[in-house]
Amino acid sequence: AENEAVEQVAFADRLLLNKVDLVSEADLGRVEARLRAINRFAPIQRCEQAAVDVGSLLDIRGFDLERTLEMDPEFLSTDGEHAHDASVSSVGINEEGEVDFELVQDWVHTLLQTQGARLYRMKGVLSVAGRREQLVFQAVHMVFKWTSELRREEETGRRSRLVVIGKDLDHAQLRADFAACVLSPALTARKAALAAKAEQVCRWARELLPTAFAGEAATVCEVRRSKPECPIETVIKVMLRKPKELTVCKPLVAVTREDIAGVMRSWNDVLRRGATVRALAEQALPQAVRGERVIVDEDEAQHVTGDDFETAIHVLCSPPWSMKVLRRLEEVTQQNVKEVMALASLCGSHGVPSVR
Image 1 (tube, rainbow, N blue to C red):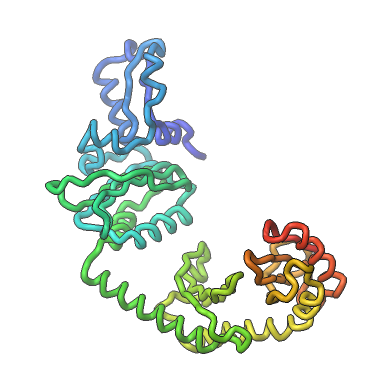
Image 2 (tube, one colour):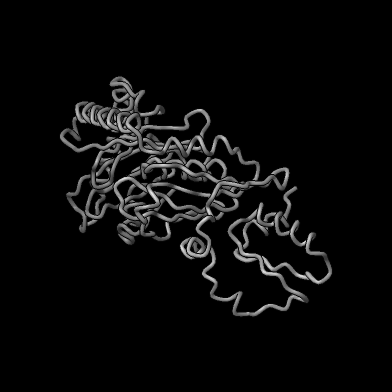
């Protein structure tokens, strides 16, 4: 079961320690030490009979790291961590040097995807390569944002510091994963190799595009997924007005020319099977988009229809129109196309109408 009291302390911006007149100073010290072990962000205010100045609770700029650092420069120090609960803990991370912003974003994204429910709070100051100012970030559970920038004093050197509060945290793994984001000659070399690989994959994609889309531009990127069987996918995006995404279930460095040829063959097959639907859609185009290019695709079903796939029709006007028939390509009728096109003419690019 979740420890509600511990969670409330972990999320707090301010802690009121009431009935301090009923216990000894030694007991108060022990309670405050445990509270700080759970949440080093929140100031503790002692009180009796809950008598506190309302002004101390309002407009407190909660979760404001810049103000906290002004009051306590050692706030993000990693010294003096204490175990306080069997499952909830806080871990401090302190890394010399600059971090790669793209890698930090990937690290945070992965952390929130895989452990978001167990992360209570995160906060830190990062020295990012290519930026003169330090970046401040903060997170509560899976809600994350960059909040502001702090001027970096030259004498403090380039350093990133953060604190994570959560349940069942792997301190060593968190530190190791963040350390992998610190800029180094080896990391720079790996990024250069990855950029070269991305250009090679883009070249393969352009060479292997279906004849109907020859000459179109393509981009490539890695995407992290919460799927154990394929945690990192490579996504090739063909830059049509309605971009076409093709996915290879491999990290970018492992993608081969044959992988690209395989996804292009699959796309060609869909284009071939969808030729009749495309012709019907072109005939049914309303006057506003008459003559615009139409492409037809088959997607995994997003609705509970009994079918595994549904047909997508895209009119490549600007901005593009998209619509769906909740049937496989081979089952789409002329009447389906007329009905969904009539709906699309009403909403244009502001929605994705569908018919069954």
